[in-house]
Length: 486
Image 1: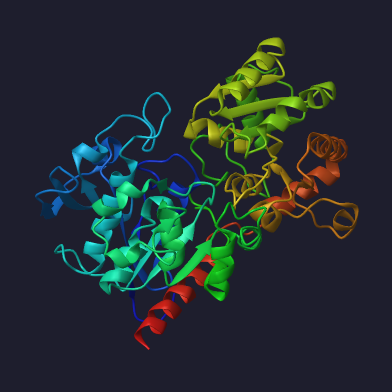
Image 2: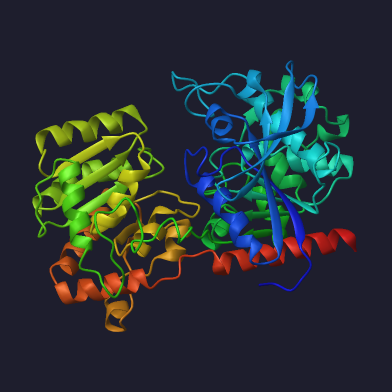
């Protein structure tokens, strides 16, 4: 443990595991506080008071009341839940809504998202500056576009320093110019150096421009987003941030994701006692209606069904997968055409393709434990967490060479295998033809049982914990705080 003095960090995010989760953002925000504690850094997390969050609070104490926050009363509640020190912004007119935090039941963005998340950022600044009765912070850690205005509030009000983390640059929080007068920012903020972005308000753009440092979730993604091809309109700004943009790999909570203790598996297994993985495979096959066949190569998919994730390529490559006698277990939801395509394929091949549309934490764990390989053919992938879980469970990732996938999986090419290395199969470019080549490579490896077991052991011995990443976060946080104080 670090012997340095404790640093007080306020993390602000729109979701946190295990209270509310739509993707990997929640997992990271939920895992970082515990990991940073080992570095002498105390984290308190501010998040919106969605119904699921308020339901989980037990003995919450009100620390501040806002008579009016975007046309409605609000309260700041403090509680400790699931090992997390939380501040929850209870504002029923903004957050008391069913389902997904960002979209309405018809799948469209909530029309007042600009104010819902401006409120979160505004309150984050009030907390960080010590104006709510809650302790002030030495540093603020803002996550994704929903908190992008937070560095702006802090910068224009002389608050503590901030670090902005980009989990996915594709989601930027862009709104029309008529939002700006309602934000409570000075006129000077309406500029190319502030929150203005192509004549509107750019929330993520504001965070990137005005934070003391910017991080993203893998070194390769940090390089990719500096290019026109990967920068999604923000590459110029990201290049301008230069040495203040850092790529720090994600980790996973190896207590939650542990095949040796996982309550969702029928039997536990470890790298030195791997045989019980076959029980998970049989359970997964039975759960999704597949033929219970230990000899069939079983591919798993745990993903949003979107173009970004390359799931259209999996759909078009199914003849290659099925033709070799393999099976597919899919968990996810997303674009209607993709979901309909997989549903139709499962109807035609019910013993080879099993789908569960939606999300289930239990089934996600069962796929990680029971599949032989995990398909992740993303066209771009900031970091990815499913491949880290797959490595932990000895389920070989089959990945595109993109972002954090390239940083975390060692391709089982001929030289790597000869050297005793390799933890998965990697392909590029991200096309149907190259995915099919990767599938055929995976079949070839599967047909060599001794080699497959060696590669599985390699995967399970990979350090996918927060140990290395959190040391980098801690060093960056201390450097930012020291730089502001100098």
